[in-house]
Length: 96
Figure (cartoon, rainbow, N blue to C red):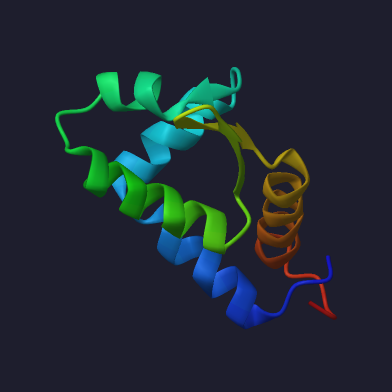
């Protein structure tokens, strides 16, 4: 766990949105094109871009250009790190 409390606060802020949580759930299963993510929601492409930017800024997802679209994957290392942090604070361990 090499993140600061500010980093974890940013992660928690990104996770505080229902749409972003659903996107993370979708990406936990497979890499997805933005077009396929967009099909699952009743939002515009700019709104999806806003959500993806939030998730990328805190490194929860990775994106790569594929033609006209972006393809996204879940950053499993970052999610594991967050799980470790939450486990540590819920177990009341010292030295967070």
